[in-house]
Each structure stands twice: as structure tokens, then as C-alpha cells.
Image (cartoon, rainbow, N blue to C red; front, side, top):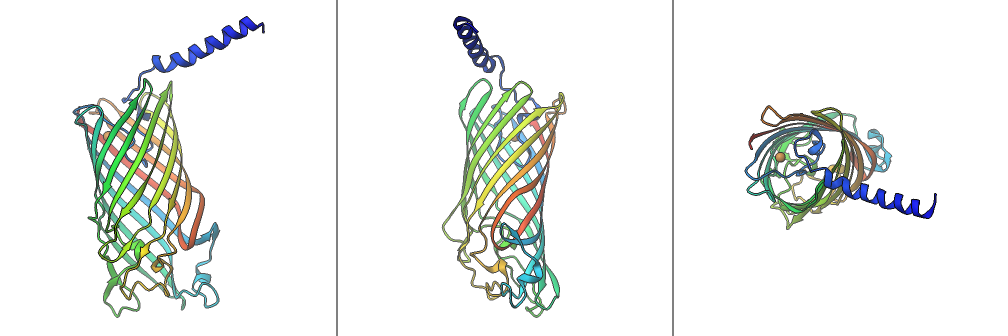
Length: 343
Ligand SMILES: [Cu+2]
């Protein structure tokens, strides 16, 4: 190519790239204008809009690991192994989450979520016996706002300013083989609340171009103070990135990657049943870890039915590096319904 032709081509390409965002307006009425359903606080609303949502999340945890190595349950409770008398073998976790959003202005969307937990945990003892414990109920209510920081033609950036309130129980009890039929305090993973006020800040960046969309969110959960039972769950930081693709007028699919790092518990529960010498779930120093998950999500959007959405996402782990023995997450499924009755 001649220099003038090359210069012209470069300028034309630059104009084309710059003109693309101007030509395309951010469109909230696309199937992929909401993130995969496992992402919280991904979108704002227009002034006056109300959205109600329901999500069901199921997390399947089976088997433990230490570092990136999977462990055999019988080895964890063998006298020559890690010296525990009991270890969890499986923990299915279910959660119903009810949410509401309201936008007092185009810039600010207020939101709140109410989770209801349903946990059970199966165990094996050194003698080979098995037993289960159960817990559940209302978890920690989260309230706050999504504050628009910048809006371009086809991109937007907002701050997630969310606070988690200690409405969930940290006194979940059940019967253990050693408790003579009495209900006693369960270990940390079976508690449904943190017991502390937690700050959950995040930044969310969204973009659309043609039939594609993308988004990124990074943030954390930071616990304030110590709960009434003298412990504090570890802080958590996460980052997630997704790519969405319109597959039709009302259908989109998205791939997502999420990395999460969780810290250990500080302090300790003084209940005799939460004995760190007996079971790994009672060890405050065996809670931390880093996981990377990959998700496939599908969004269905019915604009005429008062902006009704159905979405599902299935996540599998790519990396599980846990300070263990600690139960590993094998898969997570989220199903959600969203409706905008007032707009
Ligand atoms: Cu919404």
C-alpha cells in the first residue's frame, strides 16, 4: 500500500471504530441487557421503574480438598491422617432469594434482597457411622443502591453500594451423635448469617455492540466488627467478566468467568459442640480459599408481558485452591424470574 492510501485506511478505520458507539445506543430492552442471573446488582433502571425478582440457587458440595488436591473422606478421619474424628462428606445448599429494585432517578437504583436458606450436611465418623445436620431460614438482608458513575452511548459504569444486615441466624442448632439427643450449636458453614454488618462495594461496567454485550464486576464483602458469638467471617473479594450474545429477539446466551477469594474466620465460637479438634468445619483457619468458576447463562426476555424475564446459569469450577480439609463446590445452578410491573 502507498503511504497516502495506508494513512487514509487508518483514518477511515479509526472513524469507523469511533462512530460505532455513537451509532448504537445502550438498549435496556435486550435479552442480554441483564447479566447472567448469578450476577447481583448488574443493571440500573430508568426513573420510576420497579422490578421484582425471585432467584433459586443450588450449590452442590461433595468431597473435600486441601490446596488443589482432592481428599478421600476416610483419610480425613483416619487416625494416621488429619486426625479428625468427623468430616463432612456432602453439603447441598439451597437458597431462595426475593429481590426488589426501584429507581428514584435515572442515576440511582435502590435495591434490596431477602435470602431464605436451606442447608444440610452429611458426615462420616472415624468409626464409619454417618449422620446429617440441617439448618436454614432467613439469611442476611442486603440493601443499598446502584449509583451511575458514567454513561457512554453503548457503555455504562456504576458503583454498587450495598450493605448486608445481620438478620440471619448465627445460632443454628441440631442434634449430633455426641449430644445425647440435644440440639447444640452447629459449626460455621451451617450458620445462615454472618452476624455482622458487612459492606459489599463493587464496580460494574457494561457494554453493548451489535449483537454482542459484555460486562465486568469487581468487589468484595468486608465484615465490620465481631458478631455476638465472638467471631467474624473472612472477607471476600471477587471479580467476574462475561460475554453475551443475542441469539434471537428475546433470547441471549452468555459465558462468564468468576474468581473469588475468601479469608479465614477470626475469633471463635465458644460452644463445646464447635470443637476444632473434632471436625474441620469447626476450624476457623480452614475456611479460606480461591476459586475460579466458569458459567453458561441463558436469558429469555418477554418485553410485552410487562418486561418479564426468565434466566438460568450453570457454573462449574475451573480452579479450587482451598485451605483444607474443606468441602469443595462441584457445581452451582441459579434460576431467576424478573418482572418490571411499573415502568
Ligand atoms: Cu432490575
